[in-house]
Length: 49
Image 1 (tube, rainbow, N blue to C red):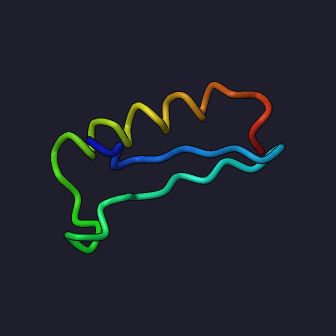
Image 2: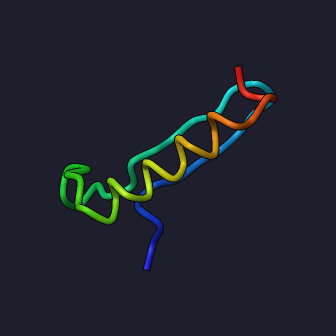
Image 3: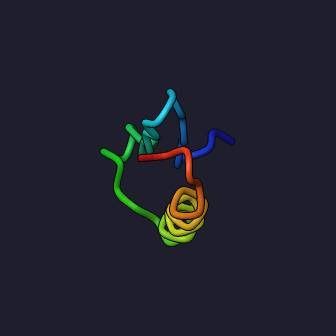
């Protein structure tokens, strides 16, 4: 199964990508949960501006 929330970093920039193109990136409940986890992770990262 492909991860539907992707996180990439390039220096000080973090990019969060919704990866569910077959459903036009409609959010599912597990996607909302994962998105929250990613944002918590990023909020604690001092290297992301």
